[in-house]
Length: 133
Image 1: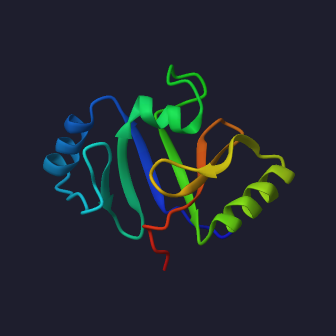
Image 2: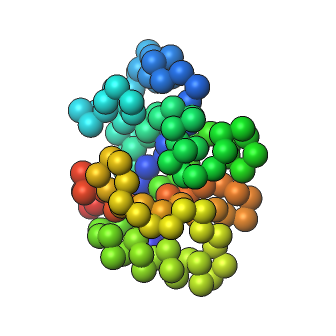
């Protein structure tokens, strides 16, 4: 697996309040890919996403009650759906716990979730809208 984090997604209780905090307090600007349901901010080499906490937990297939879910996920993006399948299989073979099998997802991509030993969520995803350099 290449050493790369492409997207940090924070599960937030109030999307508007969080957007305003990052915009006004940090001075960060959202990207054109942002919508009414998710905010993206381009950082130095990675993106920060703000997504409703309940929606993020639902996407990963875990409860949002704080047990097994910390309000954020880390993402490792790859170049194809096939690469998602292969990487998840490799990680599972090495002992990673798969929380959500690879599947097509509502936002137009293909993703899976695994947990690290401390139950931090990692999304392994192909996002056709996010070019990798």
